[in-house]
Every structure is written in C-alpha cells, then in structure tokens.
Image (cartoon, rainbow, N blue to C red; front, side):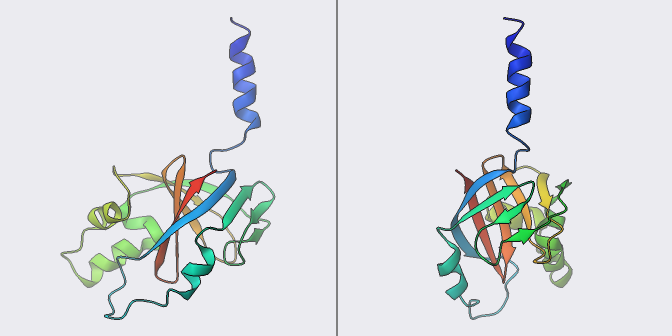
Length: 149
C-alpha cells in the first residue's frame, strides 16, 4: 500500500494545474456593474455560450475572444473587490451602498476569497474560480460561467 502514494502523487502532477483542461461556457449574465437602463448587446453571448475553451501550458484555445498564445499565467487569490479587474470595487466607489461581496454572491461566489488565473494575454481575460470545476470571466459587461469538462 505504501507504493500507492507515490503513484497517486505522480498522477496528480501529470494532470497539471487545476485550471488546465476543457471548459464549456455554460451561461452569460449581465454584469452587476452595468448601470444603464438598456442591457448591453447580447449578440456576443449567443456566439460564446456553448463553446469550449481549452487551457493548457502552451496557450488558450477557443473562440476568438478567449484565445491566447504564449500566456504568462499567475494564480492569485482575490477578494470580491478585485474580481473582474476591480469592477465590484468600482461599483462601490460610485455608490457606497454597493457591497463587493454581495455583488460577487449574486453571480455565484460564496466565501470571501477565490483563486484567479491571470493569463497575461492581450485580451486581458482573467478566470475567476468559484471552485475547481466552475470558473467565470467578464467580457463586454457580461459575466460568463464555464464548467470543467
């Protein structure tokens, strides 16, 4: 039985970081920071929902908006005010009654801190992980949810 532990450790290392693999974009919602009466244009959401994004060491493959060659990944831990490039904090700076933690909870984040994959890509997309099987990214005033396949 002692021999099993090294084998399990090697298998875990071979599978790569938690964020690698295929992720399906399952939904899109208007971002809570959107304050205009008219919703942002939903046309892009129709082209992205249902698509697959593949994240690996060499890059990110998927729809044009998510694709990236030569990423410079960094995993960081963010509180609610830093999610979506600080948009929840910006909401609060415009309206003190807006709580970043409550805004994060509206889109599925529970707890107080979450892993974020900063990609270092030109498209400036970061992936925020609700858990190891559910990620989000913000794009053009929508929040997209991805599920690991």
